[in-house]
Image (cartoon, rainbow, N blue to C red; front, side, top):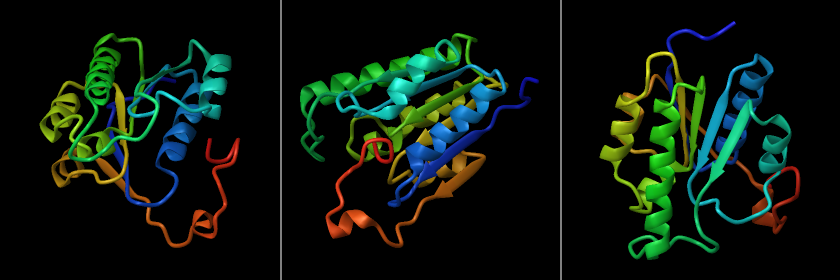
Length: 176
């Protein structure tokens, strides 16, 4: 059963779980035989479990990861960060336009805007380019008010308590 009338969802806030929630939605969609594309900003390095799972679920789940090794610096992005963000934005537009996907998740695009790697106007243009039957999910901290206003659903993850504060590092299969 194919979905009707794709919506725009935003997962934002300083709490853990934005990418995880979008991956849960992707898994649900694949389980219902929908085709899913995930474009990840600023995640070009690292050993993430979702990439291993995507290999097993291909061609129903495709993940494009972009970004370089290291952290992005606000106010002074590395030229490669800007180049990788351009690539991610282009991949997101292509995923929406190609007609192959029912669900397109653009992971960490809100953070990419906060880091000045893409503009809010470019995110709004991505939303405007969404075909009617495609669900679009935009994740990342610091979603701009205009992006949230353009969305049909906004969920804010709020940190109440986090074990990272007690020195627990990222764990394989849970955070990565």
